[in-house]
Amino acid sequence: MPRLEDFSQWFYPGSRRVFTPEEMARGGTQLWPSGIDQYVFVNVVLLLAAFSHQMSKGTRPVAWFLALFVTSIALGVARWLWRRPSRRWLNIACYGLALVVTAALIVLAKTGWREVAIDHAALAVVVMTAILSAWWGLTVYRVDQIEARLRELADQDAALRLSTRLAAAQIQPHFLFNTLASLQHWVDTGDPRAAPLLRDFTAYLRATLPMFERELQPLADEIEMVRRYLAIMQARLGERLRVDIAMAPDIDAQLPPGLVLTLVENAIAHGVEPQLRGGSIDIAGHRDGNRLVLTVRDDGPGLAPGWTERVGLANTRRRLASAFPAATLTLADASPGCVATLTLPIPLTP
Image 1 (spheres, one colour):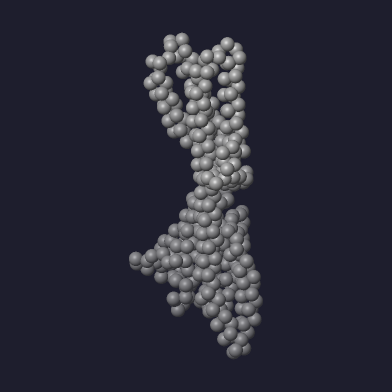
Image 2 (cartoon, rainbow, N blue to C red):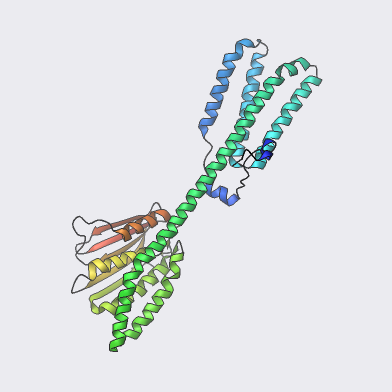
């Protein structure tokens, strides 16, 4: 922003902020407000109508034409500055206008219109000052608008990264502690299941820990992480957990990390573990027209009456909406059990 103590603003006004093409493409996509054109032209016409009685009949059409022509040029330059809100282009426009007005007055004075040039010099300076001030104010406003949009997008990115880390914190602790407790018990008792569990657990950590630093990851990586998780849970639950994963071979998608894993973890926690007989988890994915549909189904007791979303599922929904506003996530009774349906639009780009 310009400062009063910055004396360069007197002869080289404007914001020092310079946006890169990438920043303009990200934060400067706002369209030129068409209401500005209407507002300016209406006021110019009203002023012309108010002062027309002071003009002679011969000069009145010329005055109207010149006023509307200058207004059109000024608005055209304003639109140009809207797309290029920099100090450099503002001053090119300002000094260019000053040179044009000065040259026009000199030409009038040299070609026999000296009295006209002298009579209208003050008016020309006033109009020029008004236009320059409008350009300066527009450029400052536009710079502030783009900076505010870039800050908003940066805050959204930071919130998305934070929610991703929060998802990792929600998914891992009790699962890690329970797995480590089982592993310790099997090691102490010499259970042969300890070695396979340790291998699956190590592979799961290798796949999972770096994943939560990404904003998006391929669906194939997400499913591989889910397989590792389910292998660990099957080692712990044994025959109580039955798993079926059926993914269509032509699926290629990007989605926020841990999205499917959260749904699978919820299905086990609420649909399998509470039952003495255990239960089954069915994970499926397929294309449906211009959508990708992923489902996680269990055969447990289903949704409790009056159930509400907890932090994990609410955070998952927020992350999904941030990455893909058109995506949906629904939970419904499956009779028996519960089915979570995740729908993403195609093309699958955020």
